[in-house]
Image (cartoon, rainbow, N blue to C red; front, top):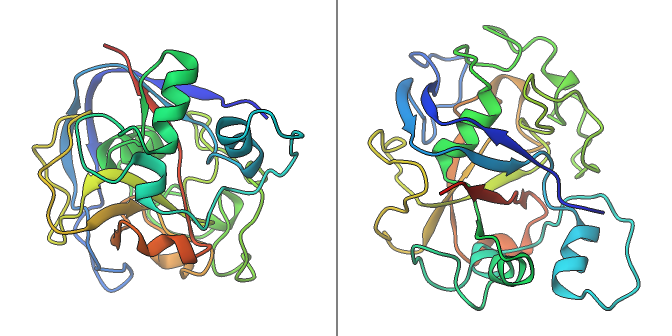
Length: 239
C-alpha cells in the first residue's frame, strides 16, 4: 500500500536499441544513444496501484488492497492540464507532492529507459533475443489480453518490476514521433507539440518480439482515460 522508489545514480547511460530490423516494431523507435542524467533520481519500482492511488486522492476512505495498476487514466489527470516545468495544481502528482513535501512527477522517457535497461545495451531485457521475456513481464504470449497485478514477474537487475509489457508507461515528455530527442536532459520537459505525450515499454497485448527496451509510442493527453493499457510510475529528482 506504500509507494516504494529506487535510486538511479547520476551518470552517462546508453539507452535505446541497436539498428532496428524486421524483428522489431519500428514505430517511434528510440535508437541507441548516450544520455547524461545530471542528478540522482528515484523511480517507483512498481506502477502506482489502485490502492495507492486511492490513498493519494481519497485518504479518508476505507483502504483498498487492489494491486492492479491504476489504469483508465489520462496524462492530464495525473500531471495536470498544462505542460509546465512542475506538475500542475489540478493533477494527482501535485496532491502527492503537497502531502509529502517532495516534488513528484512523471519520469521522462530517458529516465524510464535508463531504469528499465539497468545498464543493459541489448535490445531486450533478456539480451539479443526475446526468448524468456515472459518471465519479466506480461506480453502477448502470457498476458491473456488483460492487465495483471504489479510485481508478479521477475524484476530487472536494479529491482524494477514490469518494465516490459502489462501497461504502457506514461511519461512527462511531449511526443516526438521521429525518435527520442537525444539532447533532452533529465528532468526537463520539451516544448509542447499539440496534445501528444510519450509512453514507453509496451503492454500485455504486444507481441513478445516488439517488447524491446526502446519501445515507445505517442498518446493524446486525454485519450488514455478510456483504455486499460496505460499506467504510470512516480519519479523524484534529487536537487
